[in-house]
Amino acid sequence: MEFPSLSHHGGVHDVTGSCHQLHLNHEHSLLIDCGLLQHVDVSVGAESAPLPFDTFAIAALVVTHVHLDHVGRIPALLAAGYRGPIICSEPSAALLPLVLKDAYKLSISSDPAHVDRFTTLLSQLIVALPFERWHRVLDEQALTCSIRLQRAGHLLGSAYVECDVHYAGVERASRVVFSGDVGAPCNPLLRSVQPPERADLLVLESTYGDRLHTGRSERQSRLEAAIDRALADSGIILIPAFSLGRTQELLCELEDILHRKSLLGGGGGLEVDGSLDLAQLPIILDAPLAQRLTHVYRELHPHWNDHARVRLREGRNPLDFRQLVSIDTHARHQQVVNYLKSTGRPAIVIAGNGMCSGGRIVNYLKAMLEDSRHEVMFVGHQVKGTPGAMIQASEGASGFVQVGLDGCMYEIRAKVMTLPGYSGHADQSGLVEFAGCGGQWPEKIVLVHGETPAKRALKNALIERCARAGQRTTVVIP
Image (cartoon, rainbow, N blue to C red; front, side):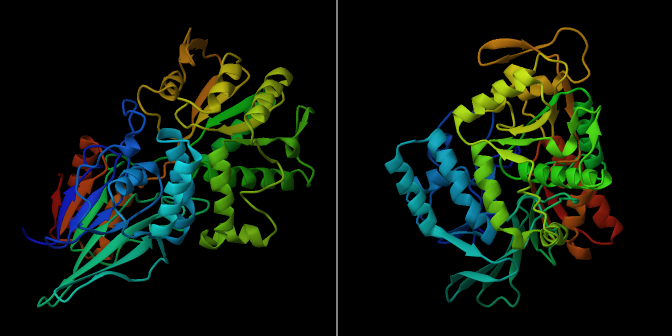
């Protein structure tokens, strides 16, 4: 076998379960991510299912970011006996215990003793690595391997991984780059991704390799128009949101809209139909995990982009503003649902889970879905077969449409809107730009983390762009 070499244990034929093994020699390897397959037919407890690979040769696990499709099988990795370092960026090191503790309690065991043992072990193994700093993970006479994390712009703490592998007697180190999930531009909190300076082998995600994003520059104005519409209708905007990443983006955008409108209104807010001062519009965050993660996001403000940090210096906090109301207990949650249903007071509610397949958003939907004053706003992809996908598919439909929630059928009378521009993934143009490495194209690109049509389209785009640059690269679809 020629080294370094790759094997894939997930995230190859679809967009979940990312797990890639970089074999350095017969005795040593690196594992890049250890993600969970996330489909509607994946059984509860999959986080602890046996792994399809041995752990004894793994020198280190390197985590690109803390979404479950990249870290959700870490409990299984530890159960299999892995006790090596779990290397990630400093923001990811703060977020990872919260994400995995919640997943462990929901899917593996809620026994406090079991949870404590798992989280204690996890914390002992995490190694927080600053961005842009080389770190030696293997140092032997015949082989050395160093890694460096660079910002990927997908999520706070998200990184792509540069691996320099140097063999004795070989003058130049081989550089293998794992993209993780490459972020899209215009994120209100994150710094933009910068392409790698070089790569001999690039393992590249291809989630949106067959399309170009639209609406990123207009998304805030569309969100603002939806707010105005809801106020005019005395309605409630329900946003099913994922706890990590999308929720914090939305809060940041909402704070900016409300701040700007209050300035336009002379500091006292704008009245709509004389009934509500916009400055009194509540932004309700009703998702316990999202609240805990948002608190960590606030503490990690040194990692925000320049624009967001300027807002802090101006005395504003895009993740902790006056109109933000956080709901903690289930009893308080039920009170809020009943209050909003009975009073008809306008509000914006961000609640989990993102697919409407469980969580607190379901109670809001059951209370509001049959009232045409209200609106369900989707800001992300809905997996086929989930209630969220069924509600989203009713957008623009006429006639009698129903959806099942908690075993009962509800007619969809509320308005349904999909707000484009909130994808956390780069589109085809962004992926091609990333792969170009500033003009020095890799010798080989391996496409992962994408459906087959997306990978094929991206392969063609990469080959075409590389040819225009007068260079050659091999693009492989595993």
